[in-house]
Image 1 (cartoon, rainbow, N blue to C red):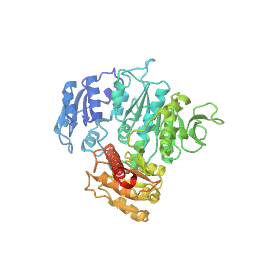
Image 2: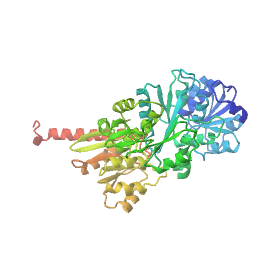
Image 3: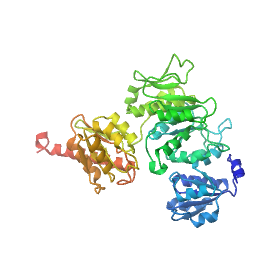
Image 4: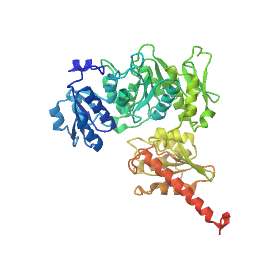
Length: 513
């Protein structure tokens, strides 16, 4: 069977009748099933829960559906005898169906592998498929993906941000409009699946790639930090032009050093310090490029100023670092410095990323609910040292002690939410015993943010920042990090509106009596 699969490296190859099992029916799973059905493959989707709309559409596109428990390999899947299994990113290596697939010697793909094989469905003007840029890292992936796509567009290229950002890469590949560049946010889960294909007949070979940073995350899924790191490192495999790494994160440099890349690919560093030749960095408040110019040993190109970025709410150190990484990727594709600057001056961060909710009475309320792990929260706390910090939720097996020791000890006070409070409380007791710690009962799910905001307001004084940077996943008390951030913002606005009403009603305030 491997012989036939080796030939399936084009949209125009003969996919007819290929038996493919698709695991999961999320947005990714449906995009996989839809693509394979369009190619003429025989598709069976296996899932524990089926979205009603996707379940309705599967027979329309010609795919079959099995809904049921997957804690063991279902008989329907065994009887189907798949030649390929394409797993959605949520299926960990330890999942029974994934393990069965590997034990049976069945080809195991992720959506990236399939997308690369059919990337030539829509060609550019010169007949070639779109270039790929791969972006991963523990934090900053989405912002960097969006910034890169914006810079490419400003430079006149048709660019599509896709992948883990929310738009399946297969949808971008099949878009009839076509693109010059696909800017692909890739998770460690997707990269783990891709790791099984790096030595295949037509491995994914991006124009440029970056791992922004590395810190412990998703350890339950991967099983260990080492496995998580190894998955992230796959992003650099077979890169053709630019391997971009973080000078402040030695792990990313080692990934580049160890990567098997196309001859001629360059290592391009980024950081907040003064850059060397072949790097991007910051000199006296100016973002500069010393990588993509002929005179890079003696000169630098100005890209933007930190002051200009501050006017757009982009001056937090980790956001500046994201901008430098994005600039390196865009510059590798020939985008000029002016286009980079223009894109940054028009850029807006997504909601729940160090977003100022309100400033009143000298107190600034900041929503960084997207800080879903300690590494992300550390960046927020670095931007707002001395804040009243709201932390807690689901830790996903990650140790928060280092974050508390390095950043938590500098906070004015801490308000702890969520169901996994014990490790956080123990970390503060050990590493920052002088910091006041306030617990909010995990049972107060519905009104938790109203209580949190009230407690923060009682302690906040002129010049203080109240920072929601939970360092955890949100699913213990909220439907998503967005829901968590929205409830925080709503509680802040309600508190401030109530305070304004109270002031208006107070005779001493000069209102009507």
